[in-house]
Length: 125
Picture 1 (cartoon, helix red, strand yellow):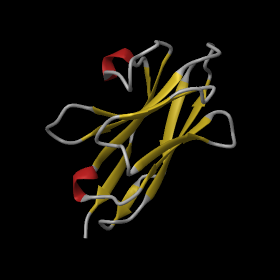
Picture 2 (cartoon, one colour):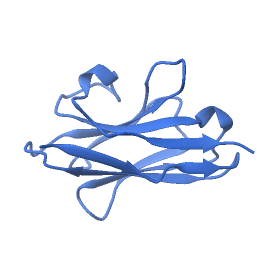
Picture 3 (cartoon, one colour):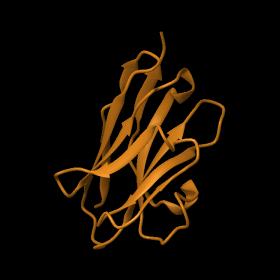
Picture 4 (cartoon, one colour):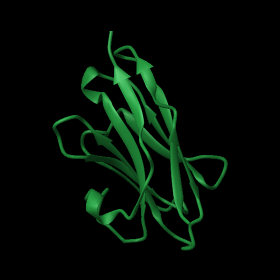
């Protein structure tokens, strides 16, 4: 059974950095896309970035460009989201998700079929 597990969340001061990790297991398909999303209370889940399982494509939402970097880890089943220059507005629960669909850009959350449990990121002084 396909499974995604996020890690790396925590509390950081404004201007700080965090690196989130998403570990995948149990995927049958050879190719899939891993996306990172953010959920802020009272707002819709927001796509941030995505990367193909073979590293062939990377896309960012406008809100993530310049401060967030998505990458594949040395372990083939791990994807990282490096977040720099964090702001209080970045506070929320961060999820990784997977899809086998060929989406344009990061895509809407409804097109992702597998989700991790989420990891909390708090940016506060």
